[in-house]
Image (cartoon, rainbow, N blue to C red; front, side, top):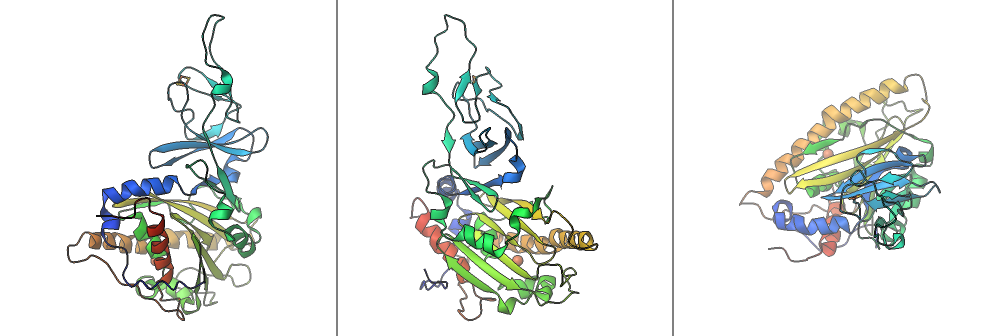
Length: 375
Ligand code: FES
Ligand SMILES: [Fe+2]
């Protein structure tokens, strides 16, 4: 795959892909067959720590085993189907709240109520249903299809690229709460949000302050199988219309990844840190974006927390709101009889306005959708 998509496709995804409940049924299968961001290893750092994840209506939990391995199981009891654990916490063993069947961290059945005359199925026949877990720079991904190849085969080179792009990421601390303010519901199809993330054609018209801080004309997209990488330098100004930058201590280049189909992560300019977000479809017209953020464990300078706060406020109150309005407006457009397909703007020399990364996403999506035909 070249770093520039050469697909000779001029028209964008048809609007039905953004509005149809039938398409969403197929996307449910797609999401259950691909790697989904579940959380960060620091959320479950000790033996017995667990967290829960839901993909569409399928429930799972990840647990840090007594052997140090993080495993993921379907959150359903094999006895009669009760949910095993809720939200997050710590369990020395997993005991079902219904009839108290008990399981080890490895998912093996270890205890049931019984008398000497009780007939029980053999313990070795029963266990929790396990699915694979992958790790990218501390972020945990699960794949509900059960027999998926590791994420390193799905997106070759991604893990290494993140570790090289953000070499001190392992030392960052997990922030409580969505520090970049990106945890929100948007009344638009999940792909509208990804489309918007994958191009900066809109930045100069719709993000005045971001555009002032950045040097978008010198940004570049690189395309790979199942992921993209965007590098975007700032204009190297300490005072900007977005938030102040400390040119000595702060990050002055933005790096943004997209992992097919619904995860984005990267390093924003400003105070050193990292974010990862999952876009969860709620319905064809509504998406929930959930974000995990990391920051340096120790302040780089006495003014760091002030700059951090200013960036968080700008992110929540300015740029996220600008993007949300754009996406919700486009979603209305998808329902208009006069609109069916849009047009890609592509320029191999000017990635700051080019929409080829978005086209790459659409091409991957169409190839991977379980049923290719949509009517
Ligand atoms: S459903 Fe879990 S023990 Fe009965
Ligand atoms: Fe935007």
